[in-house]
Image 1 (tube, rainbow, N blue to C red):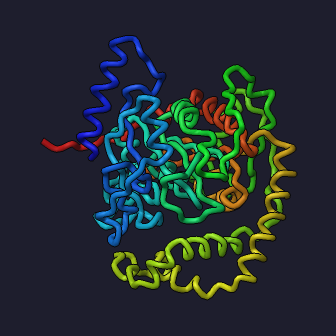
Image 2 (cartoon, helix red, strand yellow):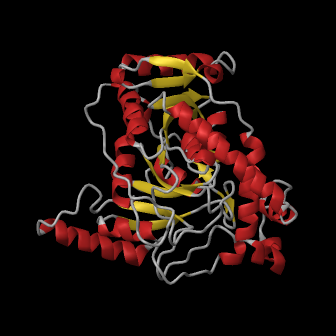
Image 3 (cartoon, rainbow, N blue to C red):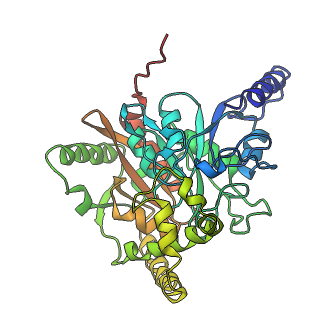
Length: 397
């Protein structure tokens, strides 16, 4: 908890608002940051044992911009160790819908805390599913912006060519509000482009070219198919003219060698020092063993993967020239891996429940056009009830 800072920011917000100085929709709103964003004087642990006492003497750009918007930082929220999964040095981050289950990761705390109503909104990061997956499992909305839309200055680096920063909220419009506060160049993260974010408010859904991955919606059993059918029907009732589509042929799974190599390089000093041994997760799929193995990835293979990734980006650019948005199940869609590599934006919203667990849709848009998937997701949200349903949290005596 960032108690001293939160109380000071809340008192300042109250003074300013009472004097007529209103900074906007986030003024005075409590929020939480994934614990990989540096906040001056506050521990930034990266969820990992070797860094549990780490204090970084600067504020991340996201922290600065939300402070300037008047938001009140009330907590640094748990994350999977070094941005993997839902396990950190304090244990497992729980899903408020089913506390015996993990909220997944690595933006585990932001998704769980937002779903439970502990914060008004949160900000997390994604390299490969770390916003989409926990948000889908916790029944909240998230926006994974275009790669290069939000500065990562002051955030832990995992993959320099894949890391993205985005909000997790209880509603789609809140995601748009938070993005508006944090996007744009800061002169420090040179991957960030100066591209306007223009919100769509009155564009008829029928005028948008919206595709859906028909084959993916037809997978599953007698429980999932009716739920997805109802979800797509709700989207049609909101005005969408859905057309079936397919992703380009690709080998995206094989290109994840890029993430492994870059993450291993980011933490090579920790690997060499033996610090990885301190992490509680030591299974074959956990970062420690991935980092150890990835030191043997040949540079030739990494570069060939990047070249193949460039071809995939061109294929996706060609595909998206025909569509404004496409819809897929979340998080188990091949489009998640593809768009993680190509940098396309996506919005996730709940679309139902199976065995008392939230299920979700993902709306993917064109590069730097977050407004289109936000608009489509908001139209779906308004046509359904799922965003109004929240877990019953037992706060104790």
